[in-house]
Length: 120
Image 1: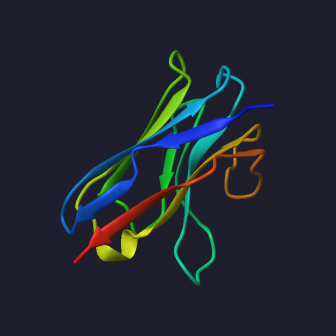
Image 2: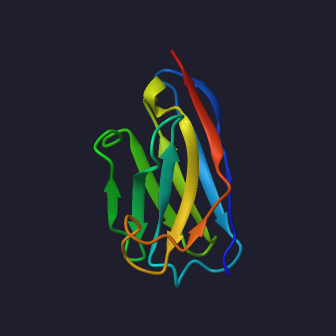
Image 3: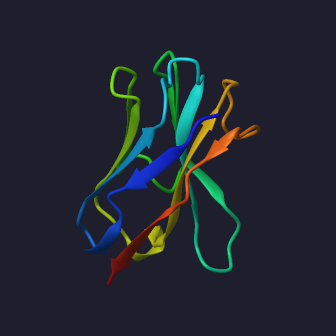
């Protein structure tokens, strides 16, 4: 079992930046895919960004060029750097992990979520 704990959410203005961090309770070396989902009020949860153990990344079209995901296996963390924030980025952001290489289809572990609010 792996516990994921997010930090770094908060309130930011349009155009600003936030950095989300997710710390795993044990080594993430065996977790093939890590990433971030988000869920805005009244909307379905969507995959924002993912990174495999080999370092391959994928992003939702809505965040390409603005968000960057990275992982540090030595520190058991995954980080989402969010720049040029928009009000539509407002959501609860969830760290997620999968033993498979496809975080879009199977999520084995979820974090508790952290709120990101972008004011206009």
